[in-house]
Amino acid sequence: MRSPRRRLRRRLSCCSAEAASRALSKKLHIKTYGCQMNVYDSGRMADVLAPLGYTGTDEARDADLIILNTCHIREKAAEKVYSELGRLRAVKEARARAGRPLLLGVAGCVAQAEGDEVRRRAPHVDLVVGPQTYHRLPELLERLARRAGAGVLVDFPADSKFDSLPDNRHVTAGAAFLTVQEGCDKFCSFCVVPYTRGAETSRPASDVLAEARSLVAAGAREITLLGQNVNSYHGEGNDGRTWDLARLIAALAEVDGLARIRYTTSYPADMSDELIRAHGEIPQLMPFLHLPVQSGSDAVLKAMNRRHNADDYRRIVGRLRAARPDLALSSDFIVGFPGESEADFAATLRLVEEIGFVQAYSFKYSARPGTPAAQMDGQVPDPLKAERLALLQELLNAQQIAFNRACAGRVLPVLLERQGRRCGQLVGRSPYMQAVHVEADGALLGSVVPLRIREGLPNSLRGEAMGVS
Ligand code: 5AD
Ligand code: SF4
Image (cartoon, rainbow, N blue to C red; front, side):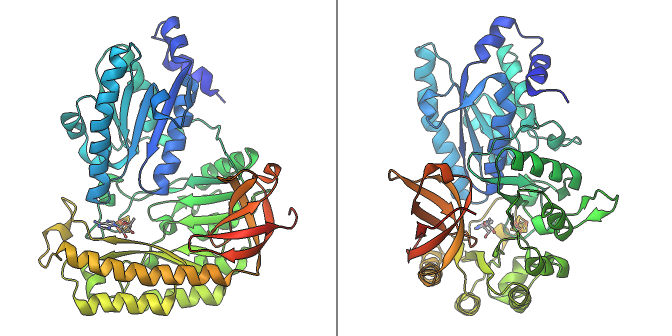
């Protein structure tokens, strides 16, 4: 297998040796917005750029290349990117005057959705890459080095980026993301994802398994499988058949050293019998599921073009809990969707009360250009959206706090992932995705440790160490 450095040499073959050696000591800062798929992509962009000599820095001011890995899902998220680019313009100009040029890149879904428009609104941007083309960052940088102009690459290429990404993966502390599926064919009427991320595609199981093994070899004990619609995974299996997510998870459960498996984000109508059964049968599969419902009103769900109604969702949750009684649920909600009445909103509150969520994300509906809902009658005024959001969040927060408090006194296995803010403190994750703070030896980072939970706080747990598993 060709090493990343050799690939780099090939890519840089037309640059001078001097330019190459200059490139071999540069700092990269990636600012990630939005979902976990972007977190994964940011890591992979760092992997792609490492052979060019780019090392990561948390400090934007030290960077030679800053990439904003962007999110387009709500208007606020997209506008944040442009205001950050405005701020970086002054930084870039100051750096040019000081003789230490700064390169600026825009990646992710704003890049994909707006393409050339990004450079029209922010001409100081040097490169624009979509979620499917970031493996070609070295080529764009080379073009810039040759002063062949800024690069915009936002197509949906026939060849998969996954075939070109380096094999080496970095795992900082025990937990890693692994993208297995991309894109979405569901076309919820409010959502830009089918347009920015394209049609559903799944990676072959053998690629996923190889990446999982390399993550475990690099220290991962937990892998979260990622996809916009991860439970519609339908990849080519090792046996020549099409594998669904349940089959893929069963194969991953055989990977030695992999203690925990999670997957996100799921679409309710794609929760198959096999996948529900897997929750009861595969101990590595963690008892936590993010299953966005969006609304508790059938009329709103229909207008959203969701393929489930509120009772379907209740039934799916009932079956999941029958398979895995301690399953904790998280969800996404949109309030103020066009036409949402008081009664529709009350139905959402009712559903939340019945199901009980341990964590949730809730948003005011944001009209996105090009989506059907943006054209619908009955747009809800912002103050009413804000009022409903506050009520919903009050209920969801109360459920989260009650769940956290109920964990006090239990012993939970916690994967210790990072240093805490306080000296001697580590932070990990419970099986139910709660952050757990504990005073413990740094040598335990990256291991799953049973902790006695002393206290349940609104956003985290406080634990006490007992021993290593
Ligand atoms: N307005 C508000 N929230 C949205 N989401 C997606 N599109 C929109 C929009 N136009 C939310 C959904 C989705 C989550 C990732 O973002 O709840 O599940
Ligand atoms: Fe967007 Fe709906 Fe697809 Fe989720 S399922 S990515 S909300 S279109």
